[in-house]
Image (cartoon, rainbow over all chains, first blue to last red; front, top):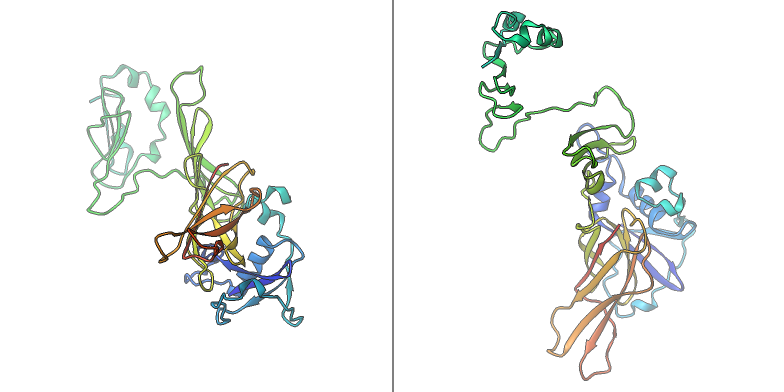
Length: 102
Length: 252
């Protein structure tokens, strides 16, 4: 999954780092990850996008490989699935050393 | 050998008062020992204190002030020492340390501490020299110091942007052709860090190359990276998507 949002008229695509996704896992007693991938993407949106940014989560199956007109990609909101990045909690901000936001 | 305490599971091994040792006869040692704690339930010698005042646990010939020995098998790491801050207490940020000292006029020679970070499952090991932090190893895999990279990443944006490998990076944003934003998992302490970026493109003519630079000032949460084509003799220079984009950050 990825995030997509409007960046000054051009669509920006946020690719989560696989290692960071692993870092966000919460394992149960059997070693299974209890956090859904969508929840992790929302966490990354809240962390990496400016607060209040409208974005959507798109599946990996969405083909973004043809970059011939990359600079012409635009973000068209789908109100049914569009989300808005929110603030992290103070504890989360501290854990990421985001002290300027505290 | 001054004293041998046999680990028979009883205090019979503590019958040291009868030994011809003035210190013991004076009662200094006897009063300082919790007799019930010196047991091992077996027949081997549990603790040895020799005439050099070296204490041996698991060895009858202690070579240092405290010498702990347990034979380790092949490819086996034996736990020789357990430092317990009380596992039944859930206090945030608690930990313990080992301290080295040399001269009273200076701060401690060194200190190695291990602690819980906050109230979660994270932990860290910290090495201090003269009371200054030299290296912090965090359970999320980061090594924090002036000589370890705070973050690095290698990504490919010739097709759908793919992060090939990274350290302390939460995401890369594909902004446009040859234009990416690296966001750190854990922010830098300030913007005065050193960021080095570079790139590599497969194929191309002998006079075709690429280069990268950071775009705009450092931010505590990351950098913007531009990648450009450098082609001798053509007018096709400009932003370009390449196979490998590298970013490396050192600093506080």
